[in-house]
Image 1 (spheres, rainbow, N blue to C red):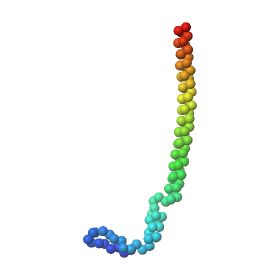
Image 2: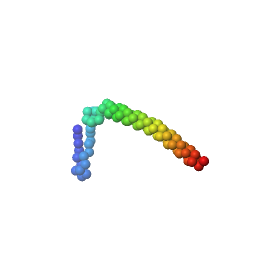
Image 3: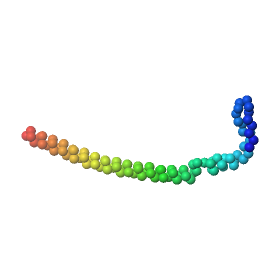
Image 4: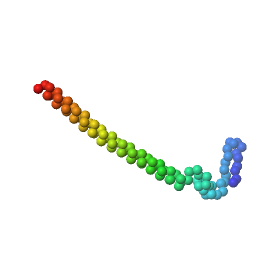
Length: 91
């Protein structure tokens, strides 16, 4: 690899990178700390984890909604009973 150093700017100018394809291969395959297969596997594991948590949250939401509906029905019955009792007292 030929490198010319410009003394005026003190910048390094790369005149020729011999095998660009080889350098690209080294940079993106050999030296890559995040190979594609590893990333796909980690994404799949994370997706399964998130979907599992979502299923749990949806189940908790359904349970809460059913418990809340039952509680509202009981509360409404108590309110109606109290209203009937007050009407009976007035007669």
